[in-house]
Image 1 (cartoon, rainbow, N blue to C red):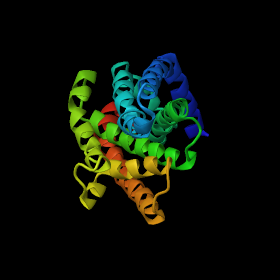
Image 2: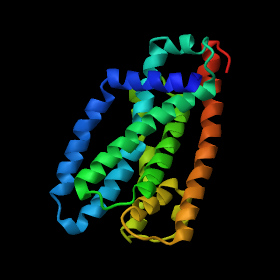
Image 3: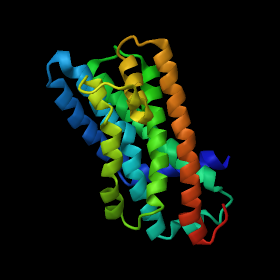
Length: 234
């Protein structure tokens, strides 16, 4: 199966370039910081950490991966093989989301033990990771260097962290639900305590909807600005 082969290739590539080892060190730092905090605020600190790092790490890594492959002319070789553009995109999405899920699980267990609902945690982190990798495909289509990619990234992160205002009761508004990470925080919060079922269902539906739109957008621009310029077919 082409997709399975592509995922294995991407996982090996990420191991080879030290992504997992580097992020293990980052996880250890996060764990140390969270465990040094008073017990009463660890859960909030953990939620903020999971939102601002593991769930969006794929967005940061993707830019480097695509631009590396582009610079090494790897994309030309990939797109003359039987692999389709959609399979290429989903391979990156799945492999980077695996890293996000593993790191979030490690940070959570080491910080607060096993007293959490892994289903809600993985739904929140997984759907958000997929969304941000799609967004990364869109951004990388317009950038030529890693520095350019990173300099363009802050606007995404500023918007993504705005729901923290609602999370900390600094500014409450249902309008925050037009920002995907509001739903992320709801699902992460549900991992540590009960939340209204309707709110959880709404959060999952919204994230799925945002993911669908992000995939359409990513596919369009990646095909137009990356695939066509390699002279390959989709």
